[in-house]
Length: 451
Ligand SMILES: Cc1ncc(COP(=O)(O)O)c(C=O)c1O
Image 1 (cartoon, rainbow, N blue to C red):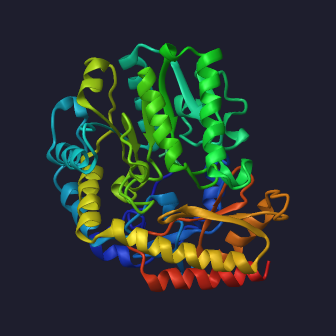
Image 2: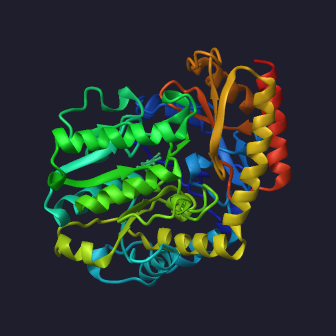
């Protein structure tokens, strides 16, 4: 059996002081990780990371990188935000774990309360899990049992997670479902309204085409009274950073209302101010029946949630769902600090303003570079799509991969998305400054010019 030596620095935690420096261990995380971690995990980078501070992530050589990847929209306040760290330390000293079935714990109940207050009526009842996929699982189960209907409509190109239920509605990359079937039955895919890719930039045409596809399905194959829910990302995430047109979401809401179908918004990536509104569905002025949250909810600690009106949860039935770790008190304490910080520091407005700055800077870069076909998104959830040719719009995945690799070499962390990796996505922290946006744009401009 492998034994850690007593003096091994991995075990040598000395509290808050330890966070501002590399781990100090000689362990080569890349070498050991390559040997002992499952090779199934695709990695954007083959670097080893030592620690984070503010908006910088440090590699094991001590080199700083401007972190506009934020663990895919998770460290939304940056690394080591003092309010979040203080909440974590304080709760960790009190109680690490309480299985929900044991009763109630203050940070868990309190986070549910502040979340309900942050969401529009009638979204007032919260179930906590550990991740985005679990939030989707719970929402789908709730929808089926509360409506007594089996069918789920989801969108082509969406990403909702890797567990079987969530995977069954995930088609952002064919590799994710391949060989894992049989998946959940009665899932029906409809086209996401993609103006740039499918409709020559015409949002109205994209909206009508998607709605017509849904209506066709309801008229022909799946009777409306069999459909439990329509599940949608208000801005397509892993599938390529494509915001749903406002009018599409409004009409989708109306269609669901007409047929008693639940509308589930997957706000796992778009939520928490990411798109310049606290919740992305606000851009369309609609209220979903169920909202799924994770990622930024606890600034990096594992936590997920889905929120629906109490009456829906009551239809679900006592004991029909549960979790050992869901709603961990330390994660929830961090979650309260996250929401309070967003509010106190006006970070939704900051995301909107910095997003405008970034969008206009990226559009200027695009004007000079024909390999950029499209710049789009809302708030601080912006995508830059690379194409081989602006006329054919053929995706250029090699360009996307090269851009993020070279940006990393120059100290800027960006990620790609889209099945072809051809969309470079910008997911800066919500409290990013104007100077940091300029810094990122300068590196990106230089890298793209040298492609
Ligand atoms: C929109 C969306 N939903 C769900 C998930 C799954 O979340 P998790 O990886 O926490 O299971 C993700 C993760 O990227 C996501 O972007």
